[in-house]
Length: 529
Image 1 (cartoon, rainbow, N blue to C red):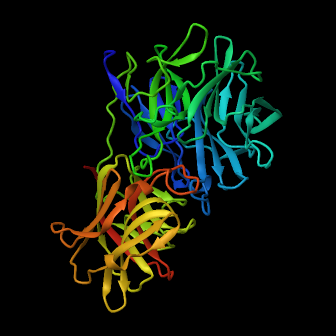
Image 2: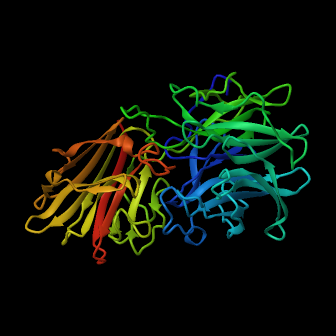
Image 3: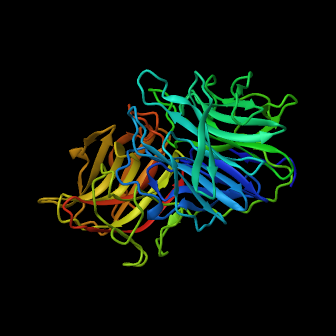
């Protein structure tokens, strides 16, 4: 491979925030946050940092991840992946309260000999704050570092970065807690590194929105004091609203076998609207090449602190032949493919089956799209704002309380739903159900009687800021359903609530009467436009 090869950002498009990176031999791994989605913490692997393939989920058992009742944008925050003493270590937070002075966060550790698992049962560590990571020092000792959350009204909520030793034999934190850095600016996402006699602290700064960035600090002693880099932010776009990668921040470092260094970080690609930019795809994972200066500080290799869309790849890395997820799922496997996610709970035979009717995804209707407990919903991340989702539905509802269809989703407070239901005197009816920042409507002028349709095909077309629904009885003649909708409302940047995820599109079923009405989906396809 030559030095002319480049990687193109984002390397993990769509909702893949808070990336954590580690190299083991010639393999690189990136783990990302999943918040209220199940399974938790997808991991992708690569040999060249250019092409990445899905390598599983690290929290894929119900016993390791109970998210029932978790608020929107709560759940699994900021996993941190490391490799030490022949094992993978994963630290992660589960946040059960957002939007209040309290966080109610628990931090856990799991380990495995291989990235594919099996992963150990979770070890509870602490609840003092989120964004935990592990630092394995050269002397063999291991340390936990995380944000200290302060709920008191007269104190900054971001109360500094705290350090405590972890004892692998006792499987517990030991010794005292040291606050190693306080700062007037909002700082979080701490990661520790050791190089040339210095301890380096990488920090996310400025929150996760438009003011986001990465700042470095260093000390000769693990416990500080730490001095912030006098040059300011290592990475940010806060002062460049025209940059294609916005909200850049929250990162980790990795070195190559040849001694090159790269920074993985999150960023978002905005869509312009009259109300301002909105990032429908959420926060995505990107890579930048970095270099150490003669005086021991870290800098982006291209000379400024703005992320680039195109970055030189490692000079001698073996080329990765990444496997691409197919656009179409005909539901012929016995389990959901890796691109699918469910809300808060795992897929189990009580509500989802791929074997009861082979070649169909069967959903049994459960709670409403506003529920945070037991939804029958499966969805895929949007990775482009120019795409088309299509599915074929077989569903014969008998009551108005039974629904199934195609849903474009941000969270329980904001989604667009093209669904089939039953209406007295008309039979099967197709129409829209819209929840817009908590306000629910079902426009009567969008309802179409489809009692005599031989088939029901449903489609959603995303085109930048616009979303259009349509339906067909035969796959040839398509009928527009409803008006042009604002796709940018499916973003962190819409509404007054704290939001940290990204847009999904998928299928779902509800039965508000509790009879578990069955909906069968023949296939699902998500393609670029």
